[in-house]
Length: 185
Image (tube, rainbow, N blue to C red):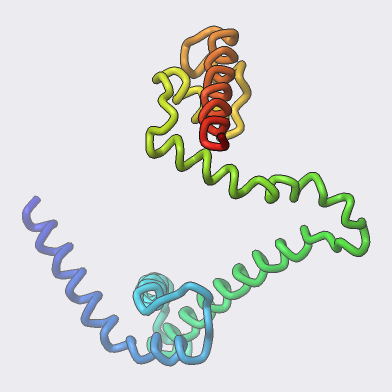
């Protein structure tokens, strides 16, 4: 068992020594291609993956050196990453809808919540600072409710009746309203 660990460590050292010979190829590709959100560590990781792939698939006697073969494997890998990145961009563009085509009325429902952003932040701040005191049930029910979970499912998650969840949410709403009214006086 110890021999295997020694050979694994040797393979790791040998791999890193071999990779250090081909790092200039990684730097060359990095200067030629731009991949969004990629830093040097990402480039080096992709270079190591490409080296491993090249070592697994390289066959001598096919008319190319290992260095050129590695460069080809690495460049193909980078091009694949770029294609994937562009495909994600296109997907977002395909889902886009022109306001001019459908009219601003189609978006009015989606943008209404922006009118209340300041109020939402104020309520969140009151809850975080403890200005509005909630019971554990009220707090957990509110947490699920704000994540978009229906009261029926909240009841299942909290092992409560649906009526108890509705009551907890109503108490929470009333406490928040009361605090806002006190502050407005």
